[in-house]
Length: 93
Image: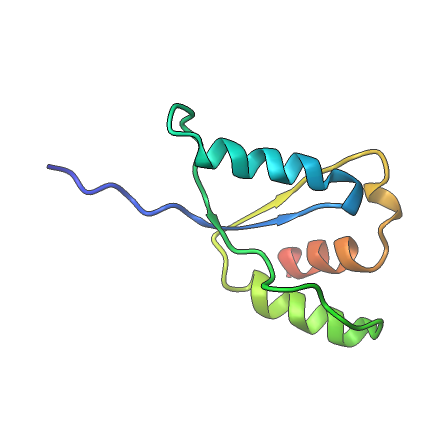
């Protein structure tokens, strides 16, 4: 019997306005009749800082350990110059 490959460690970046879309992804993952899976590798808690260098360092550390980076793009994503931007830059690096 062939081994089932483990799900890729995945970080999903999204604007707070798109949290419902992220929640939908998690619901698909939990549904036994939907073939959709990923190992959710989000931050354990919100970053409690306004210091750009600290925010970026936390993002780099977490995103550097994932296999897959997903960016949910909504109507206001381009305006998110702190957290989403830092997450995308960490993924590109």
